[in-house]
Length: 254
Image 1: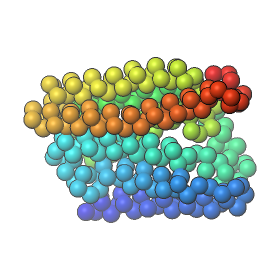
Image 2: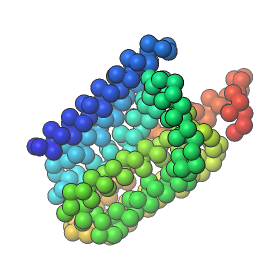
Image 3: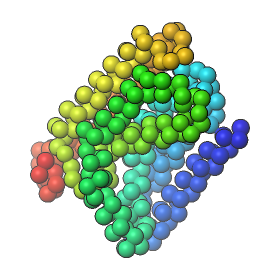
Image 4: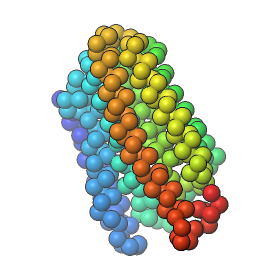
């Protein structure tokens, strides 16, 4: 219950900060769409389920609930938050000097490396293989700080991967839609193969029946979120190449 209150408070704080940034940005720029606030609030509320409430409570003892938390925190929450464009909002809300500092960070070699589609895919899918095929899964349920670190990585890697696929924020370079789609197909295959592997090879201290239920949830639940990502990526691709629609400089370069 104590942890529930802590993480729910963090979620409310994040939404309040987003609201404050909206208010600041609107004073200097045109209005910020309310739907993005709703997407951000939805993403935060979805992600916090991995820590608080019934899913967070049962995830310590049930692989099925753990997997439900993984899907919410690592896939659905990043997608909703990415669509709310928090970095773009931050750039509009900050003073000019602060916004330039954020842009320099975004254009750094380290940031370019992290938002590269291949890097993001390896961090996202590779991290899951590391979690479920080594004793790390057992340790995260024994040591609190390991659990927090794993949850942070799951969200951060999911966020980077979604950003690298959709480019909804002002990244310093953009790979082509074909390139991103190819990387996405390999990542999708890696996620699907891992779920099938877990179906036959339960993680440490997880029973066979429970592993099979969790693996099926991972397979079909992951496909549902991936389908939304595919639709958005294809929609962007269509808009960039639709006949009769003038291309921007960046789109033409792709």
